[in-house]
Image (cartoon, rainbow, N blue to C red; front, top):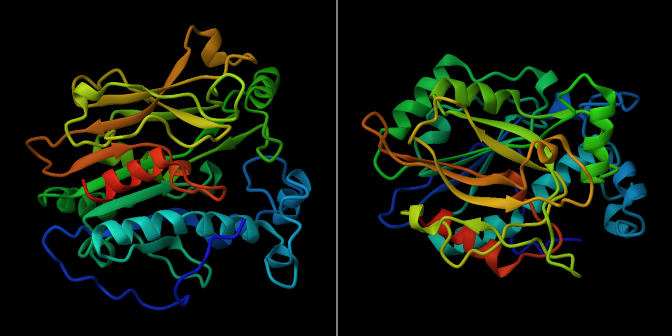
Length: 338
């Protein structure tokens, strides 16, 4: 499904810094992947790679059988799938720009042209809310450099900053092949291999910043009975001091969402704002351990060392191609203007 483009597209140009305007937050997206590394993975590799666009077309047939996705107009390899990710954030970008009066800047750790951009002052100087989309595979070995951690810590000392840390799922972490198959049959997405582990970069950033959270599993959310709509969140609105959940009842439906597990030293530093009911139709190790919901939205309030907020939710709630619900629009607006 195409997203309508309302303005001219630019590519491979230097970022033009946005001027600070009181009350108009500047939102930036940072994709943690190396675009060249991810797109040049051998398609004969079974695990830990993105699908090719040809595979997407095959599994989703005939949804993508349109002229705009034919080989003459669209990349058919893994690069095509990564471009779908880029296209899928356009709705969020338009809404955030409208809500804040500022354009959304989009950065990649290593882009299509091979330019590497670590998180530093070039990104942070004109950013108030930074969304870190953790979609690099663990085997890509992307690591947050000590200089990046230091830059983010310094930035988070600035009043009004917000870091959204969004590592994606970790499917098939076990060496037990039967367990990997159980996970695969639980999420039921033919485009996700038996092992697909994200995100080395975001995990190293969380360690460096002392965020006591870990992304686990790839869980299929429950739906409302008799529909294809995601089941409502179990929301803890009394903890939502920033209004992230204002007029938000549910997130976007995605077949394999991460559980944001709190580590044993989390203490009171992390507030679980919402949990998502799990589809219990097919077994999963997390369910067999007695769980029926997973952590889907977290908030780390400011501390004595950090003036800014940290939010955690999955990046797929911002990458939608098939329509935007009112609830998701409200989440976007709440975060962009928080």
